[in-house]
Every structure is written in C-alpha cells, then in structure tokens.
Image (cartoon, rainbow, N blue to C red; front, side, top):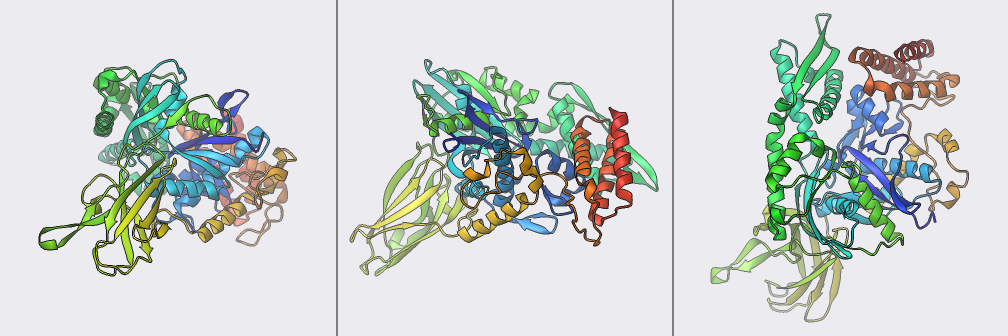
Length: 615
C-alpha cells in the first residue's frame, strides 16, 4: 500500500496542504493540528531550520532570516538569503515540500515517495520545471505537475451524469488564475486558462499596510517601516484585519508599544472599515476580470452559458470579489467546497487515479501559452528579417502536445542551428517569455534551404522538450534547452538534496514519534527524510554556543515546549499581552544563542508565569 500511495500537494504562495486517498475518500491531511501549513521557511539564530507556523511567527523577530511567498520567485535565478546563508527558490520550496512529506508520513505511518504538485495555470515552463526540481530535492518522485484551477474543478465536479461548463476563479496569496472547464460524461476538459502570476493576497495586504502607515504618519508618528520589529508586527496585524473584514464591516488595528520616541512608547489604535479596504483593492479586483473576459473569449463561451462559478483561494472570501463575480457573470459563486482546500483535494483526486483508484473520469488539460522558436522571414530583396516568432504548439492545445513545423537553413553549408525558444502570443519574438536556447548541429554542408523538421513536445506537466530532424539525411537530435531560467544542474540538485537532508537530520529526537519500521521502507539514501521534522528551537545536550558556553542540557525539552506553547497562542492574544510574550521569546532565544545559562531559567520562568495568568 505504501509503495502505491501518491499524495496531492497544493504548494501555495501563502499556505500549503497535502491530500491523500484513504478509506475510500480523499482526505486533506491534518498537519499537526491544522490542515493548512504556512508556506514560510526560517533559520533560527542557532542555524536550525523552521518551517510552517513557527517560521511565520519568527518572521516578526527575524525577518532577515525568513522566506515568505517564495512561490513568486520560482523560475528565477536569484538567490534568497536566510541570515548569512543563500538558497535558490527551488531549495526553499523543497524545504516546504519536505516538511509536508514528513508530516504526511507521520500521519499515515508509512513512507510517501510520490506526489502530484499543483502550480498556477499561467506558470511558465521555467516555473514549472523549478517546481518539479523542488519536489525532487524534497525526496519525491513527481508524478504530475497539475494546474491549480484544473485541480479545483476536480474537487467540485463529481456528478458524471451532467454536462456542465464552469468557471474556476482562483485568487490566492500570490497568484491569480481563471479557467473555463467543461465536464461531459466521463471527461473533464479545460477549454481555456488565463491569469496573472503577480496578483494575489500579498498585493492586497501591501495596499492596506501602506494606507495604514501613511495615516499613522499623518497623525504625527514616525514611519514604522524604518523599524524591523514594528513593521513585522504591523504586517501580521494587517493580515488579521483583512481576514476580519471578510465578515465584519469594521475592525480595529491595535498595537501597543509599536514604536517609541524619546523614551515614550507610541501605540497604534486605528479603525478600518470594509468600505475603505474595498476602495483600496478595487483596482486589483477589476484587474482580475481582464483575465476572466480573456478566458471566456478563448473558450468561445459567454457568461450566460456558465453552469457554475467556483471559488478557490483564501482571497475569494473577500465580499467585493464575490459581489463583483455575481454582478459580472450574473451568477452567484458556489461555496460548498472549502476555498483553501479545493486545490489540494483536486490534486489528491488525480493522485488517487495515478495510484490505481480509477473513478472513470478522463482529465484533459491545455497549455495556456503558445510555444515556438525565434525565426527569420525573408523580406524584400531577399533580406532576412529577424526577431519573428514562429509558434509550433498553439495556445489552448490539449496536453500532452506534439507538433512539428518545417524550417530551412538561411546560409550555405550551415552545419548548426542556434535558436531562442519562447512562450507567448506576440508575433515579435523578443516580446514573449524567453525559455532558453537550444543548439542542433551536425547538419550536412549543402546550399541554403536545407529542410529541418522541428518538433515541440509539451508533456502533461506543461514542460517542453525539442527534437530536430534534418530532412535530407534523417539525422535526429533530441536537444535540451540551454540556459533555461529555473533549471538546476544535476550536481546542484544533488548538493541541494544533501543540504536539505542535513537540516532535517538535525532533530534526531523527533524520530521517536514515528513508527519503528518507517526508515526500512524509504528510498535509497533517504533514511532520515521521513523521520525528521523541524522545530522552532533545538538546544542539544552539550551543544556549544557561539560564546563557547554549554547550554544546560536539562533545559532542552522544557525550553522547546515552552516556546512552542507561547508561539501557538500569539494569534489570539491581546496586543499588550502579545507584546510582552514576544519580548520574552526574544530574550529566551538570545540567551540560547549567547549561551547565557544564568538568565535562561529566569526568562523561561517569567514566560511560563505569564502564560499561566493568561489562561
């Protein structure tokens, strides 16, 4: 059973979830008390890895050691710093995926080796490849990269007796997608997809944060953006306010001792109305409807032909979004599936099918982009015109796709072909997304006009491969794209995997919570992968601090338990209590980092007493 288990993972910008087929149904796994895990990674001052809620809480104290919304950087070649260490976006995502893997294995009681991982429908080839790489680094065999709106449609549509056309509106923490999906008989077919990989809840938060800060400054206060801790506290307060405005017409942001001036504490106490918030975000909501109209147009459908509008992503709880969807599409959106869990459930459905639990449905997904090479066309007087785009696989083509076009050499005795590959719709090649370059060589030395067949293959994951055949000789070259953004070399992936293993191997005492036979069934070289988890604090017996002092061995478990208890309760505390608890958490962490055995017991006792009185 363990070998057949494939999990479905929603790797989100803000939160992530795991679903699995169990006991005849799809279940979103309980990840240590919650079905939703924040997609946040942090390194504590002592170098231990933290993933999830604890990392999100630490972002207030150590924003420079914390990575959030890493999904927005996937496919880029930039580095992300966690303190003094640097990682590629794939490595940060792999940390999230590994933590999901560990928690899923702890929940199920056996190893999990295979996964379906979701991505926004409008993710580029490079972003998809980076997501696949992250899965491999995390220790998964990635069975499929699945578009998020497609996954959501699987979660909603279970009645095979009805033919239905639905619009899936997916507004998450960092990305936006919309798809038109037709379910008929045993088939679920995606007709069109559109979206924006730079539009999501993070942008809504930023607008409200800046508005609140500007109001605070107008009241004669200093700018909180200049103080790390104040900005971190205010950022989390903004997220809470945004959530409350989904079901309340007004909310208050109260942050005591947010700043100080000349030794005098400065407090924030500001009322925010839903109307004020909606006025700020309305341009972003309207921007999403540009994609809605494009998707309808590409599908050849009209709004009155839709049978349902499906909501996906936490931001779809925003009343303005629901109201505008109802006004524009003249149909009240459905809310019978949890918008935060729909994608994970859909991924779990596909994972179960791939694992042999066939429900009789056929899934037909499409490519939201066209793919093709840069080519030259012959202009007047026989002068070639460069920078022309020659799409081979057209937008909206069902996956997997395999299309071939014929090209001809421009020069006599041309032995190789160097081509830039793009995805997009603009006839000018350079105005599209450049995927990379491929080189095919070994052609015959013949006059110009030598015919070359170029085949683009787009697999079910939306990842591209290219084959070139010289028509004259039948010489075939399957070429790989060089310099593709987001692609990692095998050696780099191996090193990233080893680094990740070492981080997760740093908490050996956690293996006692797992089944005794767990490590026996793991893939080669991954014995520690499923037996380790991350905790916000590790104080090993006999560990040496930077100051060279030995931390009290007897405080290891009590300190860890106390900090976890405090961090878990931060969300529901009053602002004054929260400020006091955060100060003690910071003090305890500093004592551990400095090896201060004298102050650590007193700080722990003070925090324990405070939590007791707050009960």
